[in-house]
Image (cartoon, rainbow, N blue to C red):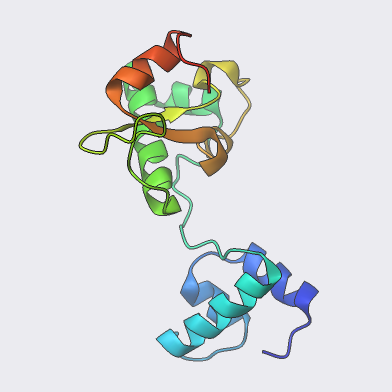
Length: 150
């Protein structure tokens, strides 16, 4: 990997998934575990993380755009919730309540409510890892109703 740190960071940040990343770095074949570990080590030393999840079509929609394309409000909310669950699941964060540690069933909550975002906000921003938290059903309800403060 004869790229400067800045070039390497740019390649990592502008590609998604190991196949794209390794191709952009000049590897011709499907990435081996040795290659991936080498890239991971350099990423770690630079304090960056490769993006491994492809964007969903929902991610590139705005809040208003998604609402306009869905049959009804429930379908719109379900699309946002399902994508939030996938983003959280891929984040590597533990699937347990951030408050009490309960882990038999958790719900993925938005720290900043979906309704608080303007209509032109991308769903990928609403469902960013930094805006998602795992909560048990009781703590999720308390948070949504202003009883619990994070």
